[in-house]
Image (spheres, rainbow, N blue to C red):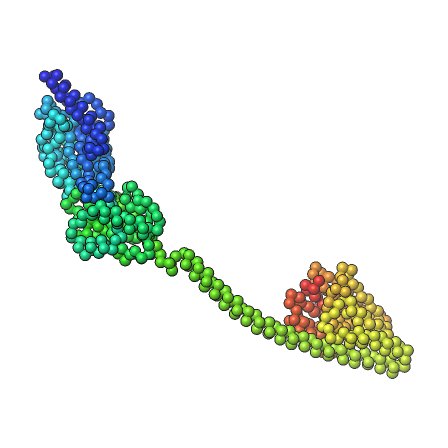
Length: 560
């Protein structure tokens, strides 16, 4: 008897080993929940699964559909030997097997089944139903649960619990089986208008796609795909899909589940709002009114947030929306506005130039007028001085005065048409005038020039210094006679020219200066010159104190 039992156990072990090593072509996979296979005996009792292929597609009818091997999502076993297996609901053939149980020992054990509703995790043996063993000589022992493969199709959110007890009522092996939805698998998709309209108008019909039709649909997609990429072996879709801009509809066909409860798919396109496929459209998803842009399609079976198929594709923009067109159009528009701006700016510049020329002419005329007014004033004052000498019968001095006055007039009138002249000439004219007035009033004068200033190359306005020198004589030192001193210093401060005219006369209150001091006309001329000059500027400053003297300071900014 012992030999018979040993022989039977050995036979079951060999059968178990053979089943667990079947080749993929046999489309059966034995899931062994025992971490390490051991010699089976009366005490080595374990519940496992025998799973058939999870697809029933006819390869001749659907040549483009890949028949995939079954997938076990999760297998767990705790320290008490309780096992938990999660599988896809789409498994076609599932048997609960009992390794270690055979004809010799089957009466020593009893198998039970319990259905756990959604949300319930605990197992209560009182509500379990007994199940018989189905034993044969050539196959492993199977629990007789014929309804398992039917119930899983609509009780996919429930859990099936199986366990074995020995004669004493002790639970020696346990298995919890949970069915979940797989991620939707695409079979193929098409952009064929005829096929799309046919399915759109008659969704309730069942369609059988011939091999040549499938190949034609694939070719159409390949020709319309501007990305020119091959199909992904997993999704059967191009690794990158960029459709022509004239394509506005796509239809996807997904492998249907062998589940009587499932009659639709859920999907979302570029948002988080899940929509269901149209009535009786399962297993198709039709996308209409696609505009140029990027799209992200997500598909799942009802309520299955953890198993989502995602595919990104793009509809190319029309030629007016392409980057090249935008660059060309943008360049053309930019060029147009640049040309327009050029002509508008040119017109504005011409008008501005005319206004500037007119303004400069007006200022030049004003400066010339002021300069012309200065000359008669100077000549009149000089003639008065000559008349005074003659009246005093200083004939010899008057003759010298007239000679020097003639030389000065030659310098002034000969160059009266110029608004600017070299500093050398201005100094020469001022010195002629000082020498003339020195004949009458016997004062002393000095002209100090910084050696770093090139007076020949430095221009200043014509007859700018003479009025201030005249004021220094007639309103400053006239009463001091030979004790009077006039000093003219010409220096530089960085790029600025600084000219100061100092006298030791009686001085005056600068806040109450009268027009007789001759400053009004020269200040008006300086203001006109400042408007005419660009980056240069002349600033006049007068300092005076009673019985101390006067200092006229002319600062020529950015002049050197």
